[in-house]
Every structure is written in structure tokens, then in C-alpha cells.
Image (cartoon, rainbow, N blue to C red; front, side, top):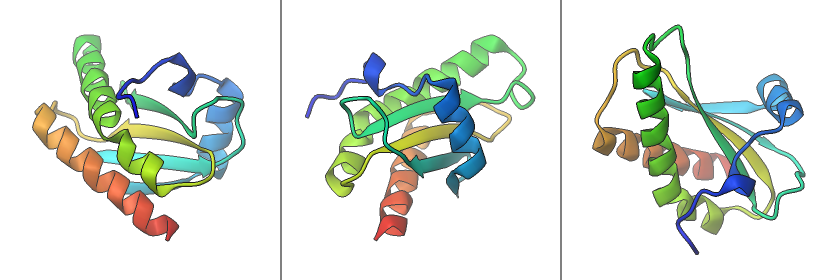
Length: 123
């Protein structure tokens, strides 16, 4: 498996995002929250994922963008855990809940915990 996060893996469809927030289930591992939904999408990849940081929580765009970069990197490096454990197609949205920026090591650790929680919930 290649450790990339290319365009087809990114959740871009407004309809899917809207459906995700209305019908999706969530798991939390502070400061990250995962909203997921089992849905058939037209991507070649099993999972389409997006990241979001609330403007209300982190005011400066520079900081929001950095947090999103760190979250995408943590997902990119650990998505193999998801692909090994699921059979159906899903859409994900990772939300950042904290008001201050955390170190990458902390975010990656929480991302792994969140993925493991998700996989346990599926079983």
C-alpha cells in the first residue's frame, strides 16, 4: 500500500458531506473526533476522508491550516490500519476540537487511538 493522500481519497462532494453530518455516527478521542458513514461512493478507494478545524475554536487561518496539515499527515501515515480492517466503502470527517495547537506526535497518537476505536466499533 502506498502512503499517499491523493485527490480521489479526499472527501469533496457537498452532498456526501451533508449526508455524513446528518446520518453519520461519531467517535471521539480528544482533541480529535471522527464522523463516519458507510456509503457507496464512486471513488476507487475504500475510504474518502476530510479534515476540518472550526473557525470558532482556532481563530487564525495560519494555525487552522497547520492543524489541518498535521491531521492529514497523521491520517496519511496510519490509514493502512483502516484499509486492513474494513471491507465496505466509508466516508470520514476528522474534526479538531481543541482551541490550541498540539504537537504532531500528540495528534498522531490520538489519530491512531481514534482509528483503533473505529475498528473496534465495527467488530
